[in-house]
Image (cartoon, rainbow, N blue to C red; front, side):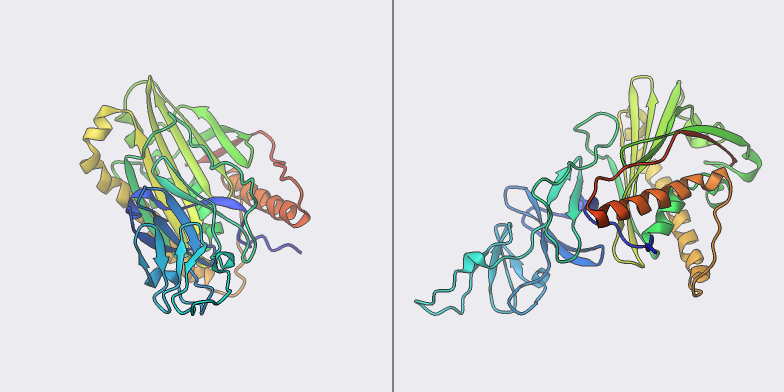
Length: 349
């Protein structure tokens, strides 16, 4: 029987916000249990290598980087940003070792709109030459995220994803004067349609019990979408203006997940209020973090029995279906097919 808790490989993941990797510097991160080294060369281009010197296994993070080459701190072996060995100081004159054949594994790495994405193949496998394009976020293209935050979630990505798309926890987890309360709960009905690797809540007017939406004014419409491996986007259109929210979940390992939150807007008012709004955004995310931490106490029991009930949990069921089909397609080396069909869901929140 297939283990649907398995992590998903051969996909793009957000490794870090662009601002965390400075020019001429490196940043060690762990993606799906694999230690990698992000870096930005002197020209500003980003790269990603396995954080491992093939000589004696020393993590390259401890070495020096001059913006062009990484020098291992153990024996001074040097590697360029493509992972090719360029120098072995201990070799005597006349030795015939072809150092150009010595390489550190390189991961496809792209910088898009202020986020660094890494394509993660299975451990020990090489990424194909024709990797797919980085997922495109909605809204104006070429934008740069104006608000970014990253937090650690001490849980498997499955629980992080389900929490991310859960439509009914808001009045309980995020109850506050500036968002919504339990007294504002009412029946909601939303239409969903499949997308290439996920599903979307078709464009609609934002919930009437969300006070944060009301201050935006105007004729508001929003579309919320989810796609594998753990990407949620919300695109709000107010007349000619846009607000785009991207939440990217990246597994650190099987017990920890990194949440990256990005926001872009063309609304001048929101840009001006950035210093005021940032604390509210952080508070909102921390409410989710607190719930995840508490949830781990219950999940620490051996093989806890969990239930998914009603339309409110349908998105979670779709996620597991998508994941199962992705794993099956990968195992059979066949194209992935999204078998979700359009449906209207109803729930209270």
